[in-house]
Amino acid sequence: MPEAGETVTPINQARSKLSEAVRDVKNALADRDDVVVDMREAHRMRLELLASELSPVFADVPSDIDFFDFALSSGLQPRLWIDAVSHVAMGRDRRTYRFVKDTRLGRIVLAESQDMKVVGDQVTRYVAERLVERQRLMEGGIEPMERPTPQADPETAAESKAGARTRGRTILGWLGLVLVGVLAGLAVSAALFWDRLLPLIDTLRP
Image 1 (tube, rainbow, N blue to C red):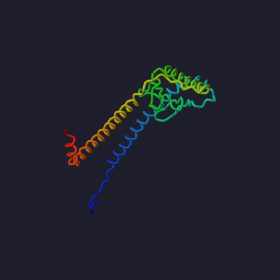
Image 2 (cartoon, helix red, strand yellow):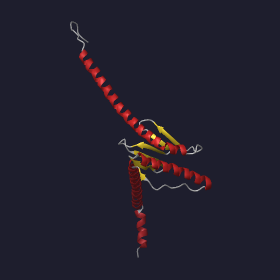
Image 3 (cartoon, rainbow, N blue to C red):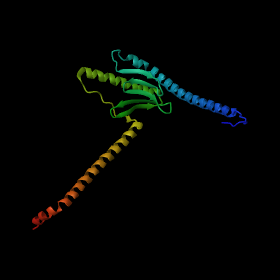
Image 4 (cartoon, rainbow, N blue to C red):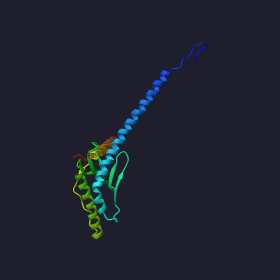
């Protein structure tokens, strides 16, 4: 609070610097958002090219089969969905197509290449296998076809190995605690009943 007789001068310069700082922050956020949008649009454009390449395959699928999706989703990570458990997305380098499938054992990579035709051929084969599998099941209740063991997704394989090691250490730790408890119980019992055990030991001696 200024005292009587004092002159107060507004500090407009500080307010101007703050306004400039706010404007700079907004510009930086806008630039970052533009980069994210550009990346997303680039991913979507490449997936649209793949979808266009596969459009004859999608069109040949009978209309009464409804377990395929054939849809291009938006979002931070655009995906070309083939069915409920498999899709194609772009890799971190923005050029590599990754055809992956979610299974009970984790995510696996069915195909990964910068060549759109290579991944398109694998998607076509996957659709054909699903159609043949459905036909075989309808005709005779035959077990589903087994695909050759594909390459595991490195991002999820490392997590699975780490989890297995943690579970193994946990089991060994519990077993060690149980063993220590048993030995401690035997030692306490021997100490409590040692006076009673001595006559029994003397009778057993030759």
